[in-house]
Image 1 (cartoon, one colour):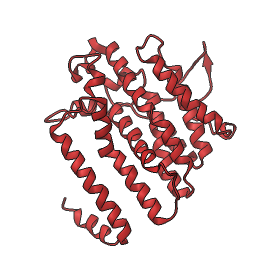
Image 2 (cartoon, rainbow, N blue to C red; image 1 turned 90 degrees about the vertical axis):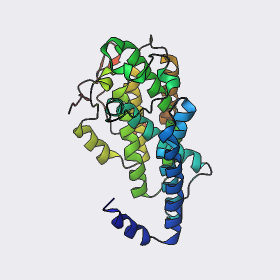
Image 3 (cartoon, rainbow, N blue to C red; image 1 turned 120 degrees about the horizontal axis):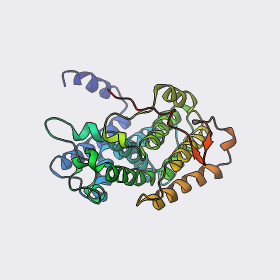
Image 4 (cartoon, helix red, strand yellow; image 1 turned 90 degrees about the horizontal axis):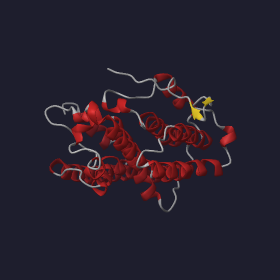
Length: 284
């Protein structure tokens, strides 16, 4: 807080329209986040609401700034799409950061909804126990499947962007998110340590995330990677495959997949993508 004066000074330098947008979103975020200080994330609706306050409103705020700048003319449903952009990123972070959040001192941060994890264990922290590894992975896959529902909105939002700098600002985190979900899916290491995309692939995403063709290509490649990891015995496999196939259809229907810079190597063995060497797990 001793550096807040710099934030205040920067805010006061903004034009009035930008100030009003930032002030509105900040107030709404603060009120929403305060609500969840005392309220647990019990249902999937609670989960969506929490993610709306934490990140969906950021998406709405950025869209308002884009519109005020007149650099973008968004689709009529931009508010819903902006919210989905934020929810997809926030849910990815919550999934990836399970072990960090559950081990938080002095009190665990618990954002996974009981409506999902309660189907597999009695307590959220039970997911990190070796004896619950199978159930934990099923729960993880359930969480990933829940996040996938936002992808079509995200691609529709990005497809409407026209300013190159704004496009990259939005597209690169979204590509990182789908890549992270592909890494986390069916991966028990989420409950053991830090799981993240290796630096070399991160650099490739940053360098290549310049056009909508790049976005479609990345989402197609990473959804193929994720699809190859789906265990048909997993309780949610049917829903997972349905959502992935919907994403792949959008990418194919774009007509630009032939232009993509592949994010994975299409090496197939026994009809499965061999991807483990691309995404090693990093521990602190």
